[in-house]
Length: 265
Image 1 (cartoon, one colour):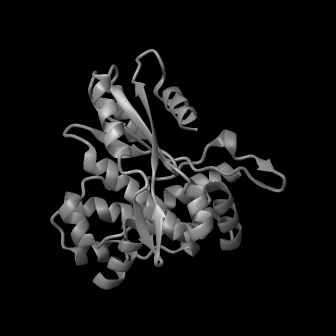
Image 2: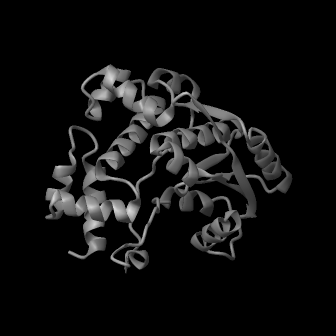
Image 3: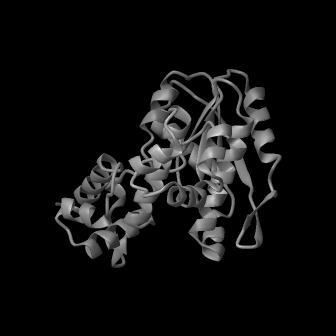
């Protein structure tokens, strides 16, 4: 199989086996690769290891079950391969910064780590390694955009996330992402939906044809810029940038998303 096919198979297998005790070794076996070879390819392509990706996808689906079902926390924990309530709570807190029970009471948005997808044109060798990719599957976003042409959207990205990851580690970066999601989720109004579209990028679909509504949302979210989260006894400032766009029927949704990313960059 080509590298693209191997990564596609690994992602497919992971998604189909998130319930239960899935291991990186099983994923490698499904691709016909050694674990070390798959780990190297996966990390170069997606900037995350197989084990960590499995953990983040499990917690994402568990969060969805917490808000979308009446199943007990223990039932959900066991469903996704956690051996006890306590083990699940520790894993959940590492990603979301709060307990499953508190999340269930207060949250709406759940997709903190959407499914990754490989991009063929970007999986090329460069100086002995692979081009770094961090592309989420945005199918649900494109479906939503199809019904909202002519309305305004707000794109956000997290400032200094790479610097935070380098200085404090990816666990701190995960909590920064969770805080950004919390701010957008807190301010969005009824009927508005939002998605994580990249490593540090989000988009809020307002459903409104009034630009002032989108501007108000951007201002309310960014009003919290500079407020901090605590990690390892240190205070880390969290800030977001924003850009407005009108969802235009004349521009393909994927092209529009790329233009938004350029605006944020």
